[in-house]
Image (cartoon, rainbow, N blue to C red):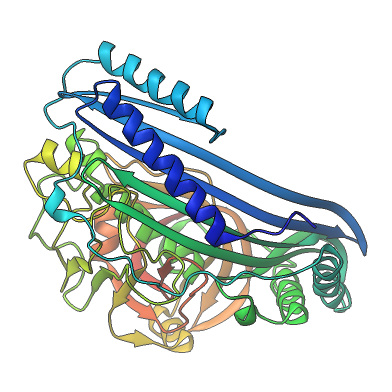
Length: 446
């Protein structure tokens, strides 16, 4: 095992380093400065066909310094948090600031917006797991999947566990720190029939190791998902409703948030520029973030600039209610920060939910998408085209697996055509959503 990780001790060390960097920046003539520092440690084990493939013990640390001289900005970073390295990093940031042009939007977030307290959000649950114990968990996961009849091969199982500490400080006097952990277990299996090989996977990912699903359950679910893909055909070309599996629907939310991001907006690189207050989804649909949710995957009491996080409603009864802004992007747009430097945290839907069976019945005839491939999304126009795999649905019932086809549309029209959301919510990431049923997408198959 790697050496013991004392999160409290690491927190104290990082805080001292951050204060050292701020003091040095001020001494060298910076009008303002901010520092981010972090250290992470983890263990990862991969097994395949009952044998250990890799055991990785990782420990990463870094410090990043940004200085402001007037409205000139300079940034530099280092993976060494020693005093000599800190001095070199600050000096480099100062040198860069002297050669950059003035930027009227540059500067720290406003002092009055800083988080005044940093509560414990229950996101730190270290796992005292030996490499032997980690290996046995991964082996038992793969073994359970390989024992399922029809599974012919394996791409392996992996277990990872890690924890870390991050500190952010700036010359407003703000100092914030957060400890966190993440643990995951995954399995990918292969099955084969006369039509060829198919593979699929399953995983579990949590903050608290006590909430990990049983390894055997993960392996068996990976096997079930793999076997159901055997005998896949190409679907007919046409226009059909498409049911996005929860893990695919979260990607649609991600594309939405990318279009709402301040950086895309001030660069005029989003199809949602100047659209606040306009309808985008059906009236029954709302989307919000809850950054202070206890124990959630993306919880944080402050954003990447030290601004106090808050609940934000991005979509309100179908209408675009808010953009996702940092202080810099807000200044470029003549608006106010939404506390989203570093992105959105814990996105949650507010919508009436239907069972998966009800969604199939409502769809009638169409495609259930369980895998997407490629990067065919244009954030400027909203045009959407992805390779896909999944299942053909007829008369509200799943008929057979399908593959080697594409689905296409436009995100704005897809959002407007959202017919229903499922109650099969995937809670493994920071975006919680069930399946999405969307009308009238173009399918290119055989």
